[in-house]
Image (tube, rainbow, N blue to C red; front, top):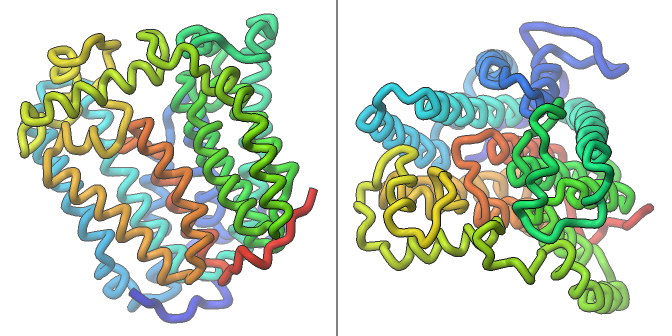
Length: 413
């Protein structure tokens, strides 16, 4: 769906000045929304709900006739189908559980935020917002670095060179020391990977440069988190980026460096020796996935219900650690919501990708943007959380600035 040209001057129901330049209230809310997902007090649902209302109001103020054309996007249709089906499933299975109600409200608010923020971004000039988001992400990551170093200091830096197992790595995350990010190793790692990759992509859009210090900084955060999730996702995304922007001899060097570093990556980062252990995160995943495929016909085509995966895993998995999902977004969608949920969520992702391509024709850029996301979705379940939603919003923000040719990007320190 194509849109009318964006106004050069953004209208907002409020105005303020922040970050040393003219940043209206809606832009400030967007930056606050980025920070809210890292706060230990879960205020982000209220922030996202307020932001959604302001974004819709500002979008209509900038282009009153655009809502009708925006609402015809197919990704909104499939997201709506998924939301309606999830709502029905929730009310069928809800028996007063607080965590169930919390997850359901999270789903509704996050999806509303995605629709509202994307509508808002599609009707404005986003240059100043991108600059402000860049500064905000740096602030976020400096606090993440402080949090991780605080964890390691309390552990006397015994795990600074890595951990023998996923279970031991998780002991680093002392809830009593938690002040920023997340107190769950894998989810914090996923958040670092997605937001970190967005941080790597920003100078490509702003300055036509792939900046090495950002790559090293984000990888350092992923390494310190002791989670394999960000490392895997970042390796996929960064390798693709460097490959596209590089010339022949740089690509040869990239292959040589990658092959020579495989033993270190396999032993220290992937922890391949313990991959199938019951106390290893990947071992748990593989066990759950085997149960899913082996007992696929025991899953109702309508789904087993909203966050009801625990019953399936208790019955069929070789061992079970208490999670209500399969550590895979698409498998969990089928387990909980059956054919309708799986197809609607998958088509939502596919059509959102196509929606992005309509805004910016750079296929390589969007492939680079979506590869780490798909890697995260294949090894974690963030379907109800805000990681995927914020990442998709940031990607659309990046793509809304200008057309980009990755083959013309320069690498800088």
